[in-house]
Image (tube, rainbow over all chains, first blue to last red; front, side, top):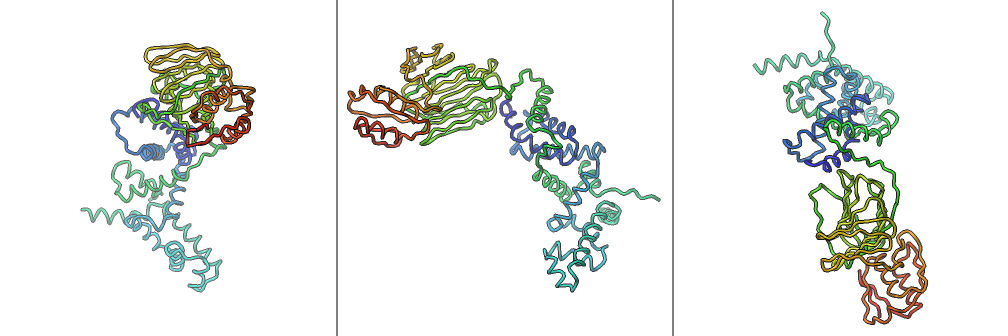
Length: 176
Length: 307
């Protein structure tokens, strides 16, 4: 990284993916380009003090931090990232850390019994719509409706921090 | 009391920025972002033409870090000259890798061509090996011929001379096309069109068309060149009309990266007429010659024995 050729080669290899990433997260073409630019400038200016084992993760993290920073400053439309986050949580339900899962479980608990059951079967047990319908004695359409309403409610729950509040309070008490 | 609805993402990011997030929460944010990174694709409609964008970003970077030189790789190619570069047998030359990672292009039994980032085109003969950077940067364009033969068509760029290293020889061109053949015992550069400077061990020679530089026993000399070698057999079909067998063999040595071994020197003077197609295999050409001369050729790897 200490010479112009190596720097240029690194730029050529990673710039495109990083820009695609920064654009996906901001939906702002100019900002996305500026983020990539700043990350590489920073990389060059700090080349002496940084010893980087794997350059790609480093660059990814740098862009990610920039994106989050702009999100915090309201420089970007917050709903872009928030919608993506909700999708991510819903899609990755089953592989999220138990600690954070606790919060989601408490959210699930708020769902009507039948809806919760259907959602758990669908997401955690990976059952198909047909299998769930057979198991619970429901029509396929009913199962589909329950899944879609359940997911919608989860999304709403993720938007509203209020459901996290009880957990936070409990947590603080525990820490005291 | 109005409750402000705050998204859970905002909560997590705030925590992370203040370094108060737990490991699980950091991992969640990290993995969320990484998933987006993994799936990110370039969308030309909303992001623009990627080549232009790349150029813009890179130029902005260079401006900010106050580099005075910018290398413009978007450069029109103009072939100005051809140089035949002939080098002896074939040796693996250990390259200087201090300039960052370079790519190696090797051929085995058939020739191949490759285009460099500045538009230059290299035709590599069989059994040859060539090293080059993925992207040119700095004042010079540096490449290396590690072994065998190559024909170069160099994109014109006066500000960034193109330099080929082959053993101890450095060939410096501005915009030309030329042949190089590099081997253990000697190195020859032949100019077909254009001008080239060849230097080695403190000696330096300028070559113009139909001249040849020969480097052998640490000495660099200029010689007139056999006209028959001033043709481009890499990209054209050629007919050698009543050429001596020696001349034909010389060309075959360049085109296929092989060495001919013969016991009887007198056969070399034999006149032959052969047609060498650009994509012809060595076997087919030798068959032609066998038909005319009754000489037998046996191919052992990179050596052809003549009986």
